[in-house]
Length: 302
Ligand SMILES: O=c1[nH]c(=O)c2[nH]c(=O)[nH]c2[nH]1
Image (cartoon, rainbow, N blue to C red; front, side):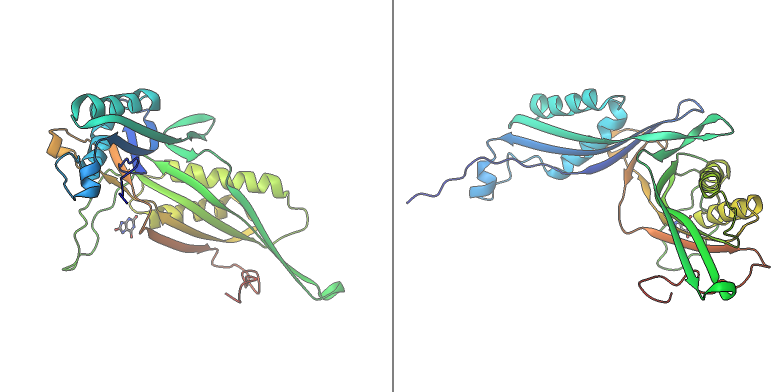
């Protein structure tokens, strides 16, 4: 009985490439997940452990990022065509290449009626949340209401820095005065009134303040941006006593294109999904009434 190798292919899956066009003050963004698969006679890698024909999946990944800069990334079709043709035309053992691309859509934040130059929210609506607790009856009845949102994914391609931080022997992070800052925001706010509040208008107003503040504050850290978001909500909404914010720092690492003789002036990034910084803060009026059970979740009293 003979054992034979059947069809086979190999590549690098789900490269998270973010390309920013920043030649003018109005930036453009392309956000992709790119997968490559090369086909051909790579049988000896399987049957004999012979890598002579194998272009490493790491090289395929490097090409994916390098092409985002070198060939540009205006449309995913042209970009995928350039990549697939390159593997087939320039890498001798490759007989066929498949490049699959998923593009994540972003829409510009609107501030004061105008589209913002370098801040977007991920398309697809965030989730609006509310939690109500009622205790007692009749005249003794007490009510607590919180509103909120989650999964509001927002990104700015400039106007963010992180410098002056404490270092220790394990610190390798370099300070930066210009970085991409992105998060998937969870925000909750506690009302001190529940009668006569226009919930829809209030929700829309708070959401807009959160995104406009994210866009407009020149950020020295995500911590500072969160505080300013909370402050903006409290200043504008007298019925809100407290805002709780939880923000994963969705890191975008500048991709090192120097091995290919390419500069990367803040244009091509690897969007890392984990680990992520998680910044959380509560912003409160100093005369806010006690929260009582407003925050006690159904999963526990925390
Ligand atoms: O905005 C930031 N806050 C941090 O605390 C932090 N830590 C880090 O590594 N990067 C950042 N960015």
